[in-house]
Amino acid sequence: MLSSSICIGCVASTNRILAPSQKCICREGFFDLNGICTACSSGCASCTSSTTCGRCVASATNNNDGTCNCPNGFFFTATGNIRFCTQCPQNCLTCTAATACQTCKPNFVLTNGACNCPSGRFINAQGQCVPCTTGCQSCNSSTTCLVCNTPLLLQENTCVTRCGPGFYQSGFTCLKCSEGCAACNTANVCTFCQAGKLAYNGFCYVNCPAGSVASSNSSSCVPCNSPCATCTEHPSKCTTCSSCCGSLHNFQCLTSCPFGTYSANGTCQFCSFNCASCLGSSTTCTACPSGKVLFNGVCYDKCPYIMIAGICTFNCAKGLYKTPVNTCLACDSTCASCENNPKNCTSCVTGFSLNGTCVKACPINYFGVNGLCQACNPECNGCLTTCDNCIDCAAGYYKCGSKCVKTCNPNQYPDETTRTCITCNPKCRTCSSQQFCTTCANPQAVPVNGVCNDCSYPCNTCGTAPSICTTCVKGFNLVGSTCIAACPTGAVPVNGVCQCNRGFIYSNQCVTNCPTGFGPIGGQCSECGANCAACSGTK
Image (cartoon, rainbow, N blue to C red; front, side, top):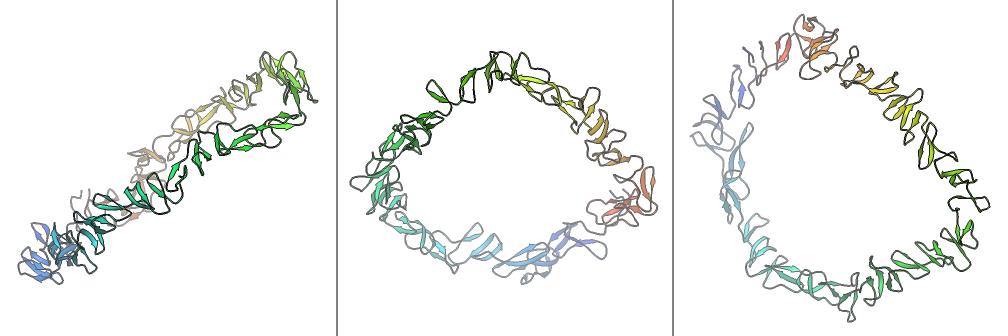
């Protein structure tokens, strides 16, 4: 804090202003009471005590006792520095505040400081509190009743002695029956439908809903018989089937479609004329007409490939291979299977297949999987299980985990002795060895001789944060908590700290005087104490 200061501005929120005498006095509408600025009495614009009012607010009358009265229908209030008379709330004749009515307009009732139109009345367009219609206990207009007097019932905003046709009683209210219903017990139980409507499950319909059909007397709907989902003319004449219960065929639901048809979209549809039977589509044959041969869901006059035991097939049995003229011949004895010629093995009786030849073990730079020898990736010198799970690396590559790479990850460096990628120390973002950083993990830091410290460059030492410098590296000088390469014009470095030849440092320049709210302390402009607009002195 300052040991001596000259205040040129008053502390905010104390209701004081700076007088020409350089003293803080109470502003208009307040008087000094034991050192505290206290508000003048109600209606008073300026005063010297609580009982002496010098001037009233606009439209108020002086009572000569320190108070002023606002006109009838108005009350005194203050907003910020403004004191005035404002109109009472709606329906009040007199009041002391926006929430404190004293008397009300005719027929309004005073309740907890507010004027309300009581139950049994409503406020009309002229703002008058007038009675509801006869029999109505609560309303919001002459035609809209909300609650009726017991034992009357409320039906569509009107009070009645009993519910009319198409309505049912619920408590003291008449509620409308469902659409098309002439009489009901509840909203969901219709007892009598309007002329031309069909009754079903307590509701009335023009047409029977899905899953039902008109009864023989045409006055109600009856549910379709299972397994029909929908029906027509009769409960057992299905038009669609339940999802659990088959496909539709000739108005019946069948668990399986007849021979020559297939199930699609819940119905049995005819197969193509080329098929004797089909499945899934009309052209996917499962059996052929007499004299035809089935192959891959299509019926042919003659098998286009190989007939084995009366079945047309594309491939020979295991241990045989197919010739260009669609015959099957035996593979070599070492092959479990082969293609195109007897010695081109695709699998072996024992060992592994390597480029069509059976071997006991896969050679270097190959690995065995599913009976085949597969090549390792070219960057590997040998691999296990997969092509990139390298045992060693080829020339020009480095081992990074189980893989071989030409370039290590950014936070690694290549070790030429072990031919591996080694991770930099945690303070490095990139490095050329385990202890020599080329860039730092801290983006504000710069490595010095390969070392990254915790302070941001060019701090040599720092305080509560990396960028709050306490001393600087060589070639930089301290200004406040910042290191700069050159002191401001008119300043020179003294023991690593910039000081002005004349004046004080403020905002990285030498100034003759500190700006408002700052004082010269230790050669720099430092912020003054709280509540003071300007200051001078020492901390």
